[in-house]
Image 1 (tube, helix red, strand yellow):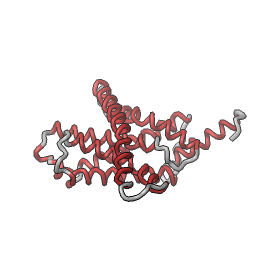
Image 2 (cartoon, helix red, strand yellow):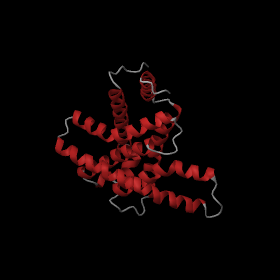
Image 3 (cartoon, helix red, strand yellow):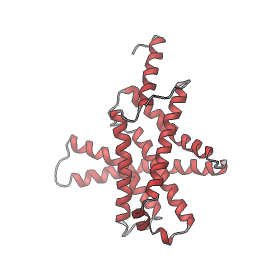
Image 4 (spheres, helix red, strand yellow):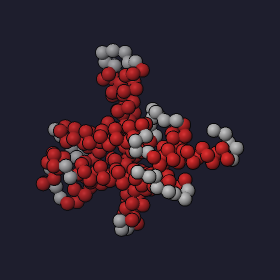
Length: 227
């Protein structure tokens, strides 16, 4: 597959962010249509409005998970790609709003979406600390934690924090006795997490990102900035 041609680095970054935002929407739709998820969520007893609300929460969960991956301090990337990921982190929410606008969603609804994404990002990012502390307490109950233990905990914190928060909102806080629904949500989010994380670190799904870095380095050399 040939890398698309762009007139600027800005266009390249916007295209990558759009691909990620659409990926979150596609992931959400797949889980939303999953028969087991719908059965465990009790869709047959819920109104159309509740169906829509749950779908929106799934989309936002996917977007926020992508944002948390892009800013993860343990991503195994060189510094240029780290900087690009931090830039993408800020572009993903806007990309999704642009995607909705292209589908004909009115601006008054886009403002609600922007607010919801910001709220869930703040919430799930904050919840990472509680998830990390709980995991360390559990893992350290019977032994002293070493570097490998801490690395494993750090690796799973983003997906666990998003899964817990998403499940809480999907159930409107009534999560007791709904462990199986949580497991389905966590399992699906974990697949999204691994796909993007492995793609970022191994380079299987980031040709635009690497092209962006190559162009950036060339521009820097031409300006006398060195490597």
